Length: 353
Image (cartoon, rainbow, N blue to C red):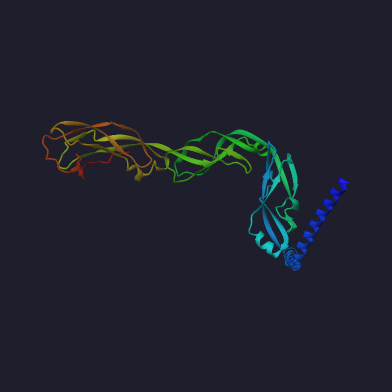
């Protein structure tokens, strides 16, 4: 009897709740629901059915998961071109956004592996219909990764000016570390550093920084090296006899110069060994000091003026003796005073070569 009363109470409670819900629903204006439904259907039609257009979209490719010990030689492309169909409102916004797709390379093996590009991996929702993918597959050519150390050699091009040559050449460091596909690295016994010679280079040491030349697909360390280059001159020995030109202050007379001539041995560029104009540039000089004793003798070292790119071997004798007269005029401004004859204040008499 008690159970029957409990069930009756529960039924009464449910009935009252149902009556309340029915009263609420009766008070709602069903016209509002109808308008909202019609608007939703219209919006769905506009976005998915009406005014569908096609467009091309670029999708950037990101690669991941390449197995250790492998390196890709060929096949990596930067982007995909995807032809899509969608409502006009959607296509207006899709072309302004960047898109990217990630490709897993964990299945790549040594040799050629083909990856198929399917619409499922593209970053587009169901509102876009994928019509075409270019390329639709990617052929990855992989090779074993090899590390190797090889020597570097100079690959000299161009030429220097006449009579010049490369006396010495050194590359620092001397070895290069290569990293790349086995088929490319294993055949490299050495790598080359291109060095371009020009006629503007002059004798003496030069320091240059040059890049190491390696095949495409191979990485080299270091990429840039230091090249120490020394340019020399091919010379010929020439012996000439020259008057010694003594420079003295104005008004100072010289009684005698012993010896008046010296023999000079000079290394000149080969092409200039018989050039009279160049050889005239070999001049022997000595300088009289500002203070001296009248009637005394002075031993002066001989200095030799040389043409460009020439070098002095010997001068004989290395000193001359200048004898001063018993009296001389007070010194004035500096000038060169020869013994015989006087030419612009310089003791000068051309000797035989």
